[in-house]
Length: 208
Image: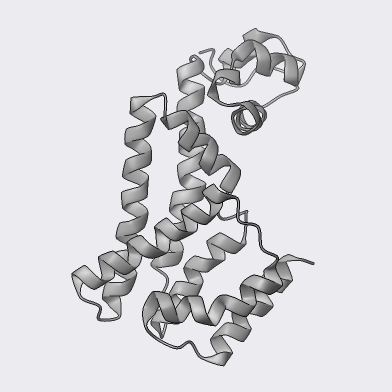
């Protein structure tokens, strides 16, 4: 790779990643090709090599970006301090409500990619486990047994990913009406009205 950025370059490393991510989401990993991306950016293919060694380097960076967004956000929210189990779970729910914290389209583009690539599948499996482990840790902080924490975490995580896979699309108003029941089913604890109201205000702030 040439040293440093190209002089007077019209595109950056972030630009290459942006169009690569868009191609992955829209048409799958086979569309993530240097020539295709160069045409999208309207630059010479040679400019790619200022930022990446080869296509494998680019696809590795795409996976890093996916994991930093979708896995790190979930783990960070699961580890946030909270006074109650329902409050702790609402921190995680922020990821399901805000696409800036969990990109569903990118998630399923990576899952589709993993079906044909063993290395990506291994990384996805590891990411799923890290997420569930973080949920288990959340429950354990509030006194749940290891088995209870594991089963509740799996149910919560698998049900959310399953809803995405099925394309369930409810308006926020409907989701918020069901929120107290979801929290009680997932935790065995009735959330306070204040907790639910705070979360509802936060969700509505995203719509502005």
